[in-house]
Image (cartoon, rainbow over all chains, first blue to last red; front, side):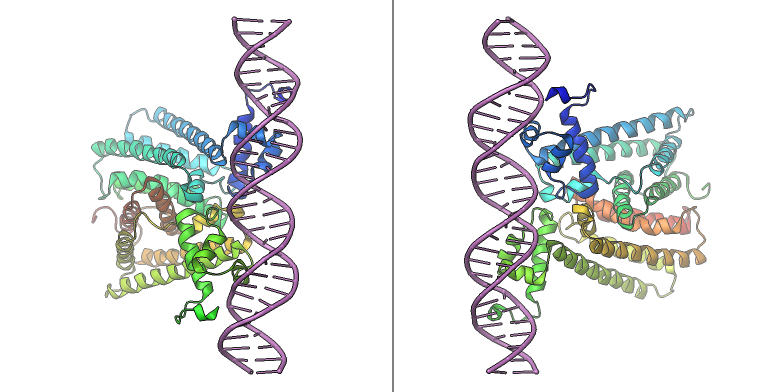
Length: 213
Length: 213
DNA sequence: TCATCCAGTGGACCGGTGGTGCAGTAGATC
DNA sequence: GATCTACTGCACCACCGGTCCACTGGATGA
């Protein structure tokens, strides 16, 4: 049915991913049926299985795309933070990054779409080695990058508080995921930005001490 | 079949809840079938639906029981923290509580069974007003209790860092849930205790400053 | 112009799962 | 002896993920 295909670059596969992602974040994976997704996209069941051999391959595609765009988002924030820190102090840079992150999160639509990794993590059997590996690699990547930054910062600003810098790196991802759950459960959209701000205060205090707060 | 019923006080209903809880935390809700649960308990399908009108009512029962025992666990830790703090300083008390909490978490079985609220939260449609309400009430309860404690502490120890005490209260639950996700995903069991310890350092610094660290 | 490939369609079918309906029953309680 | 609780057994349903198979309209390339 290529005559129905829009001129845009968005392929049927992309549309399946988009529609499914919205539905899954809204209702959960189990409550999102393939039939429902294909109905909205306007494709047959076999059309779906032409693109994905499995429901879990669809999830894999969603997760991959989400993590990729998250990567881009964070990279953009880091870039903005860096260009806004002419002196090149790594601490100022990360504090600016965290401020920008918080501001972005304040502008997010109601509550928050929800953390895909969590949605996957708690679904059936973490359900494939592959999906689990993608999520794991992403989280370990953030840990390594933030940890490296904190090590750089510690060289310039010796910590005033005894903390494990790797745990401090993990804290941002933990806090974010947890805050999304809390936000979804109590239905308050400002939970996430508030937690990021608190984390920012913590980072600031660790490297500058509580005197200059 | 009451002749099969063990003399213990554990009813068939309790056993259904126990068996289902283990399976769900291990594999996820969708991957846990009713037939599998009743096979292990040794009951018929109608026997199951005699106790629970729904699969989601089973989840409700699991959630309720989990939250109740969590309540007891925390209450016990608070009691131990209080008896170990003869001077009655609320800060020392909460710092001791957090240390005990961390120690308990270090002793938890591999990785962590997983956060029920999260498992529910991301499952089908947060799936009932009732289940959602139970989770929400629990989280708001912890927020209120920790916030009240921090307010008491702030009276004795004026904060050295500018933080929102309610957000600081939320931070513990957020961090815990997020750390469980991280822990499950990267398969490192020490993520959770390390995050709790980090939180403890933060709380300490907020109320005592970085000088005495 | 013809062959081939891509991106599907349509329909039959399968097994598992959640869930319902109904009739019956062993044992404890009143 | 009547009633209640806690089931059993069987039949049955709809939905859902997934498979198989035959077919096709349009684009591409030789």
